[in-house]
Length: 282
Image (cartoon, rainbow, N blue to C red; front, side):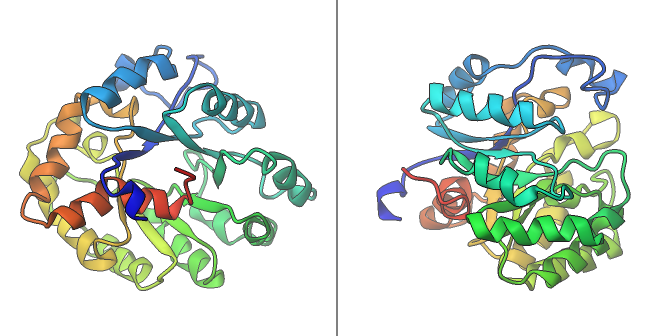
């Protein structure tokens, strides 16, 4: 991994052509992101903040979007990989994964959970799809709310050899002290050595999007204690983060928290870990 020691990778961002039906999960208080966001909008932001690459993550439950993201990666060299969507519960999931895996930019799969209970992660059909990921060396991004983390723990323990990453540190409510159950579940996930954690999506979990940097410290301390510096990954969650903060502010939260860490540790958190987890060809 020495060739990427100075590389900074944003492990989590989205692109979309805004549609009020397709993106109905964007509430009124996040109206700032009810617009189009394309690769050409992100590239100067990454460059200005010292990042040379990113991972494009699905935001819509459609294979059409997966195809679009893969096309973006082919067209823009700063998009280093794609976390797409396929129906993991489909009877022909292996065929679908085989087809998409022909494109080497596909690194993993994610399933959004906005309107679902955590039980979907333990359903037999879905787990059959998770098992199929291993056939194609694909990762799985766990998007789960704090109240769904027990199901996430059950999922990862059922597949000890599958590489997982927890998005947005499990979406705890930031405005206040860490909930004891969230802490317990984060610790359980951290015990599984194939599970990583994205430090992303923090600012939008604050009450009324009002925050100061130290609000995040207790949550970050729990995550670092559970996963260590080798399994935590920075992600901006752009453009969703723009509802509550500008990109430099999001980055600044983590830069201040990790200020006392060694240069090697910071290189892992802001780039090397993402490259390792997603098996980026750099």
